[in-house]
Amino acid sequence: MRRRDLLVAPVAAAAIGAAAAALIGFNPLGLFHSCPLRIVTGIPCPACGGTAAVKALLRGDVRDAVIASPLVALVAVGLGVAAVAALLAIPWAHTIQRLPRPRSRLLLWSAIGLIAANWIYLLIQLS
View 1 (cartoon, rainbow, N blue to C red):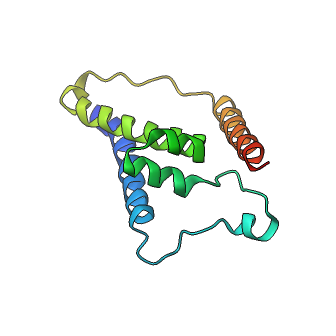
View 2: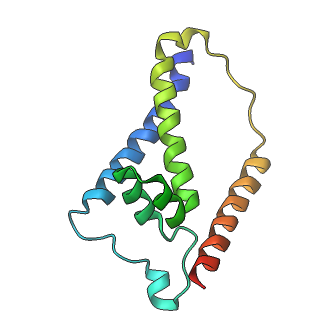
């Protein structure tokens, strides 16, 4: 694998994120209005507020994005930073060192913890 190929994943993830943000921001089909779980049960799902967070980020309002859904705001900003860093690193791709393989259980439990913390925040915000 060429070292330049290491930069493909962050740029591809950011491109997908940008396409999703554009779809949410413009919402041409009127699909993104309310969370189905919240409509049926009154309980927000772990990603509730994600659409509002992305719309706030598109307006440049980071505070409202974090209030709407801290996890979605963090992931969206992280994707943007990773994409910019990867694009800036392309001229120096030949010097990039491959990082050691991350421990998958640590990543899994970290992701579960972040999702749970976000859901608790949303539940507290509801009351």
